[in-house]
Length: 176
Image (cartoon, rainbow, N blue to C red; front, top):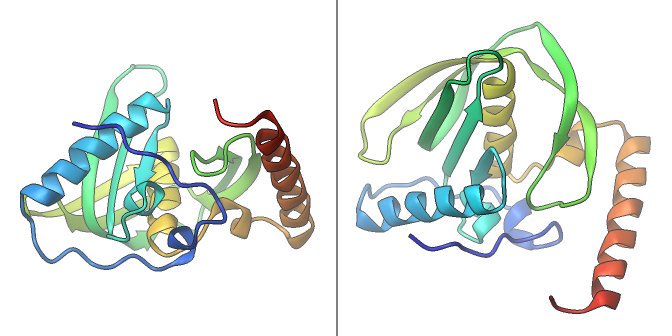
């Protein structure tokens, strides 16, 4: 298990639709293990393969359910939203590829996700609340969509302006 570098907004891999996985092999399992390690290291709740520079349709999510402390930990390969509720909710989102930015995003409250586990077994998941939000956010990454794309044009411009300022400040500070 290795911690991989997380690519930042501006890298073309984040704006490219990821390639479907065809081989459920040891390389895929290593990618999934590395993605979990990277996500935990960065204190995230979800990570898509493009965020570690790999243009493949793979994601990992681990969210703690409110109230009971249960964890919903899953790795999905070639996932897609099969159904989404009409009921939506607005909540703040951030992204490991856009550190320092957060904005309220509207998403379906519940979704049905279809895909495969890393061994190639078909999966159907019914997710709601934070688990559903995290899955939708990560599937967006697989389609080259970032959360600022899900807000109004005005909010997007403000977010991008703030991002440029944060990147300029980081460049001034130099490598850590």
